[in-house]
Length: 88
Image (cartoon, rainbow, N blue to C red; front, side, top):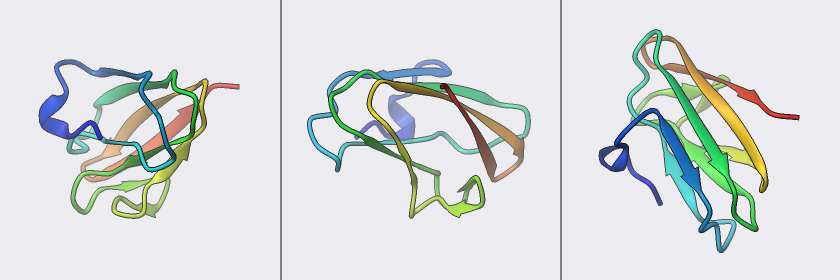
């Protein structure tokens, strides 16, 4: 799991998704922030919001799935609210 304190930039690439329980926790959603997450692993990964943040209207604690070999931009439309833009 990659936790917010592990973020050294607004880019996260995870190539060690060994199981479906591997995950990323986004940093706190601050309006205007953009984070790029790439799942280069062999399995789907879960992406969780930080605390009470939501992702696409889903509770951060529930998380959203980022399929293997996919990438997504997570855009903070407002404080506490992430929206994802997935690659094709």
